[in-house]
Length: 312
Image (cartoon, rainbow, N blue to C red; front, side, top):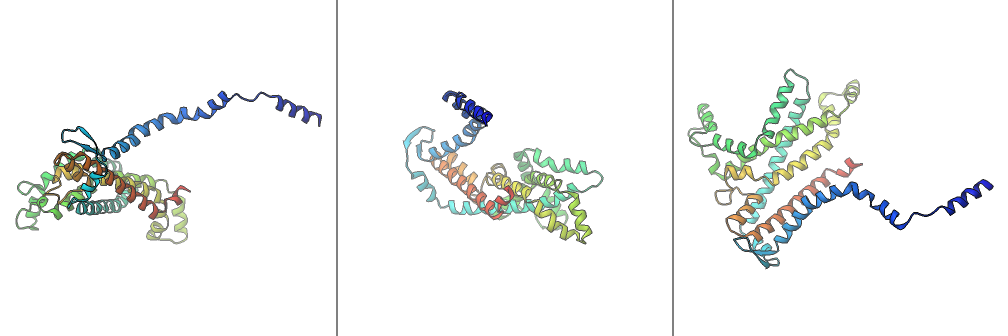
């Protein structure tokens, strides 16, 4: 009893840390978090703030700020006759490219995960389109689709699938389909390797137990592989959505968004507003709308994929 009283008395007499020391302890985590917070502020938050601020300014064609413009830039943007078709075309472009990419990536991921002679060579081959410049890949495909000297027309003529050369990129629908194929072509490596990484985290014991229970390949794929691949599919899909939505080089190199605005997406439309129409403020307003559209699409996808279950 006396020992407890002595300890309690000693604790009561122990000097309390000063306010300066307590503040130092509270601020210590900032030494570790500070660089990351500074990087996020400079690289992410500040450009977003500048984009939103510019959308409210009146800027001359030479780039001189003439003062505030209120919401006039947004009013002008929403009065554009081409805005709605461009946004709808962008949504179709993103959905078509991402869905096709994910379906093909599932098959390629399974192939890369299988054991066969020359697997390492195949893996390196698949990654080549990702390592190559997107602009150069687009220009090569544009040359291959040329109606006079393109390889595609030559092969189709030799196979008697067409009677005369076709100018594939002159027709909007054909041009969009070919550009979507190029976007899928450059997106496949990343999605395939993310899925491959997900496949390699699935324990082999699960498949052995399923075989003992008499499960076939299809049942194991639907009951084991796909559910356990959800985190990898989620990451690959979201990054693919953001990349495809903001894709500029493919469209610009192959059609320039033309004829007219027939193959424009929001990114090329935004570029034309800034550099063809010399309307930087309206282009910034388009950038804000583009940013909001991406956020909405990602949030809807996360909600549909029930991402909270993955976090738990």
